[in-house]
Image 1: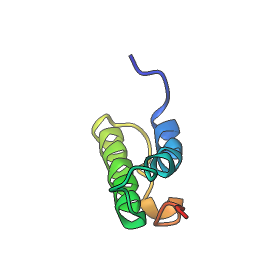
Image 2: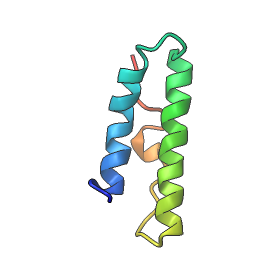
Image 3: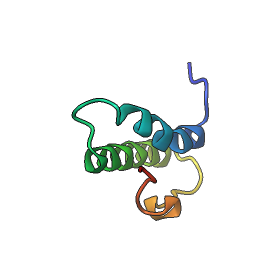
Length: 67
């Protein structure tokens, strides 16, 4: 069962990524790539499901904000 919307998942991705960055192998670059890949997968699922409006990754600034 889905407990949140697809857009909620996209919004949460940078937050989850920043938490995962505490893992030893999660460098800044790896984290950015993982978040971008996850968001692209969500958009693909939305497109496949015929849900409205694909949002380009650039709408989230192109790269997730990870410090």
